[in-house]
Amino acid sequence: MNFITYMSENMDQILSLLVEHIELTFLAVAVAILIGVPIGILISYVKKLGKPVLALANVMQAIPSMALLGFMIPFLGIGTKPAIVMVVLYSLLPIIKNTYIGIQNINADMLEAARGIGLTKWQILVKVQIPLALPVIMGGIRISAVSAVGLMTLAAFCGAGGLGYLVYAGIRSINNAQILAGAIPACILALFFDYILGIVENLVTPKYKKQGKVSFFKRRGFQVSVLILTILAFLCLIIYPVFQGEQAKKQITIGSMDFTEQEILSYMINDIIEDRTDITVNQRLSLGSSTIVLSALEQDDIDMYVDYTGTIYGSVLKHEPNSNVEEVYNISKKEMKEKYDVNVLGDLNFNNTYTLAVRRDTAEQYNLKTISDLSAVSSELVFSPTLTFMERNDCWVGLQQVYPIAFRDVMPIDGAPRYVALTNHESDVIDAYSTDGLLKKYDLVVLEDDKGFFLPYHAIPIVNNLVLEEFPEVVPILEELSNYLSDDVMRELNYKVDEEQQRPEDVARDFLIQNSLITEK
Image (cartoon, rainbow, N blue to C red; front, side, top):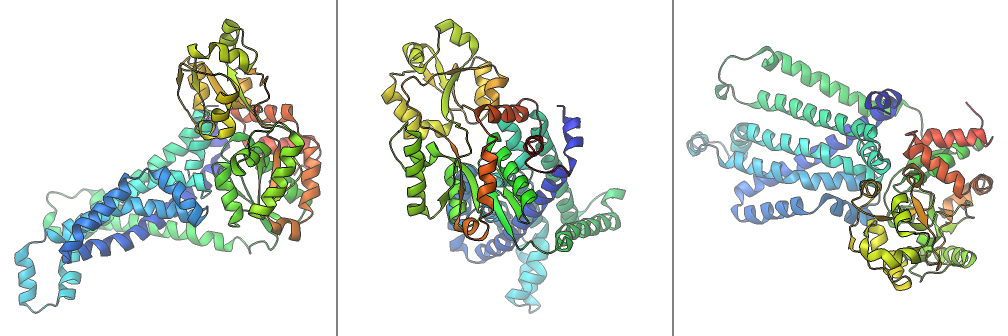
């Protein structure tokens, strides 16, 4: 699917995410201004605070943005809060520094004259220093605003929405059109923010600093008109949702992890619940790893999500590998209730377990059919696992204890790009989920786990007490859905998204309609 086709078919979604991105960025920059300008003024008066405050702001800039966001999620939950706080912290340095420099560089004779006519310190600040420093302050705000547009793409990782959702969904499914559909509007938005703030900077710059002939586009009347229209448009974006009706009284929120299968399942559950009941379903897609989504469930940011028995048993509950399907499920259900007070429902009838996969030419060259076969020749091959696979005891750590594997090199690569590395012969082996659509797309050979190391990964809905107590009708609906799912079904549905570039919501809805699980509207 080319970029133009994708844009035309998904314009509603792109515009919706663009509006979210604008609102989030504006709010973050506004908060950064309210915090940064007063701090800049403060350190220009209290000299001793200058170095430590600027050093702290520099430290915040040095922290990787993804690390900062991940650190805040356990404390602030998911949604807009962690995204806005993260962007605010990164936006402070240019605003604080430019405010400080702008005030410090005001001509000393001018300040002396102000004191000579009897102005107080407050009057000098308000009537002399801030007006003269405004052009420099606006320069810092422009830098922060442009950076904030790019940083806000990370908001998608915590369920806050924005254009980053398209970017990361496109990277995950190797859909360049989807990546561009998120990246290009974000780029245009950054340029627009810079242009509008440039107008404000020009309007607050004293006339005596402007030289030469002024073009039509820089005339005060034109710039004021553009600024007023922009403000009115933004107010419409904020006010419009207020007139969209009252919030539904019966509603639940579904979360998902950040890969294709999770989104398809989320849309399935959304559509079938809304079709069969009067419950309104909200979705918080692509929140990240299982740990983040579980944390969101504990904090009541979401009410349910789909996890996997192996993830719960091995990664969350920290049990040793166990191939007994029934035992893994029962222990997971019992201990999740005891430790987290959440409820594990019946599995959805498919097992998305871990596996190792190689190119077909590699399998033929080394006669690979099992992981034991791979172990014998591993010293000649390069392994590109996901970061999660590398860290977990029930994955890479434990795998080396069961199979004598010693790869020539290990290069962790997250998400779908590891498939690209494999097909480009930059690596030879990857970890994969058994229902990945990309396995079919790239015609890979899945190696048999002949020693039964990997845990069973049966998909299981996990819900909070609200769902069981107030919306018990959801449980039999999910049980009915499970009758239509299987490993092959999920692999095919994932393939439609990852290879055929269909939208997850369309794939989910078409599947439900074809199996008469919902009525076509």
